[in-house]
Length: 174
Image 1 (tube, helix red, strand yellow):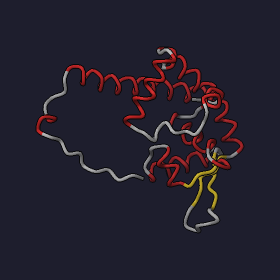
Image 2 (cartoon, one colour):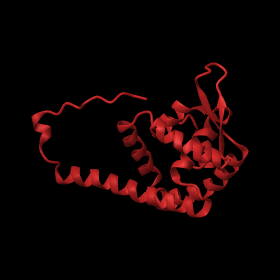
Image 3 (cartoon, one colour):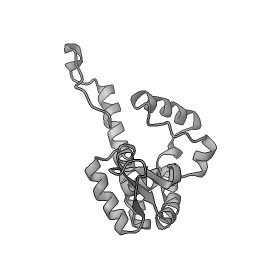
């Protein structure tokens, strides 16, 4: 995981946000919260799978051999290691993933997607994609989506690097 450093703020930047800055910032927070709430509710209702669990399973599905080192999975899913451990324990009890040992490092362990986990994820991907399309993608033109993607990349450069082609992304759950 990356180490966070304190941000140095010049005296001129310590002033209150302008109306436009505040509107943009709060809009981002509101949009994220609204979309996450809708997505979480639909995945839970239709598949008994909270959004964070869905994302963990999706990262495993995209990984080589359906498995990832626990520390890498925590980073990809943006969870603390202890938070991921609790989630993996629950998903393991549900039979959706298992823990596998690492041949290269006896101390390391992998989270491994099970057949049941892959099946549940594939069912949930239909719901995930429908909610993303209806409540997010449908509000923008293709050009606007490209612009949004470029803007997000300015803030979090590594977030968009999935290694998947647009065709592969269209066929998978976004």
